Amino acid sequence: MQKKIFGGAFFTQHLLFKHLPYGVKGNIAVSSFVAVAVSYRVTTIRTNSCQQAWMAAEDKHTFLNPLSERTKEE
Image 1 (cartoon, one colour):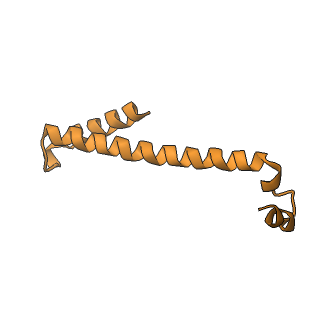
Image 2 (image 1 turned 30 degrees about the vertical axis):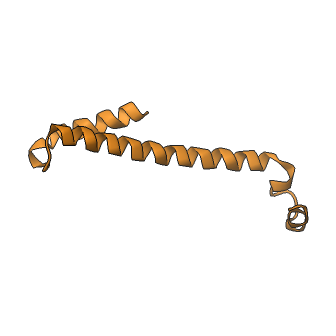
């Protein structure tokens, strides 16, 4: 996924090259930064989603248990 993001950012910058204030090395640096930032965000979202699914799979964290039972166990 990071390669697609990097490629997309680099291609977009290549199309806008005349309007951007930095050279080819800057294009690579900015593309790399964008790819890392987006990949970090996607990883964070997926990690939180997985963690919530894992907690929901446990009995004490399901919405079927009354809140009073959940607070007593913790």
